[in-house]
Length: 220
Figure 1 (cartoon, one colour):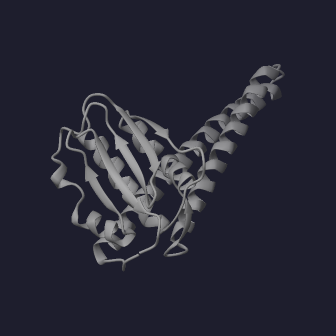
Figure 2: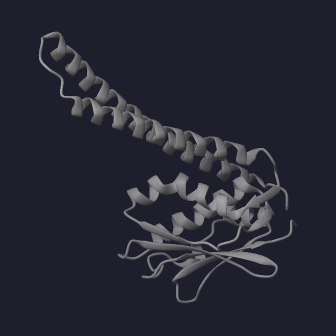
Figure 3: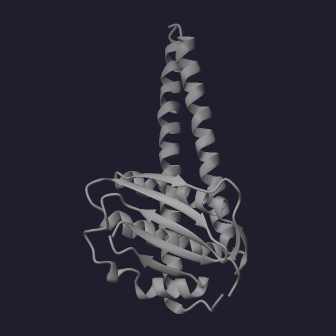
């Protein structure tokens, strides 16, 4: 793996901030639902004080809502913790299945806001490579962001991972093509630095239907 140039490090901070802001929005949504149901619980308590019977079904429904949101908040915080720990080691052996699942969880809010449906096709067996997990997540985000911004009317993307003898390839496929922007504008200079850090390369197929990220199986 190469050194971490200034542009890649600056982009990394921006990426960390953007994902952290998204996580905070999700947690605020959870708290809003808790607050709404706490208000309803206060109303029911007041009704009980006035001698009015409380429907057990309403309490059961509220309890279910609380449990669901607690589980949701737990998942968000677990992903936040995993994301924060991706900067612990400059280079480490990474399970790409786990990294991609984390990536999809962290970016789900963005794909939903853009109206995109993202399907994944991953090999059945785990794929391990030595890499810098935080910078890999950042590079995957650049690919996804470009694919969504350059896509056509069909709001559909496929993330496909395939293993070769000396590398792993990750495809971002857009059935309707990446037609709204020219491939030569992607990646940016900072993106090129990220590729250098990871010893990876990136191409856009001639027909404009997919971005191909190739990751080496051995550390550079």
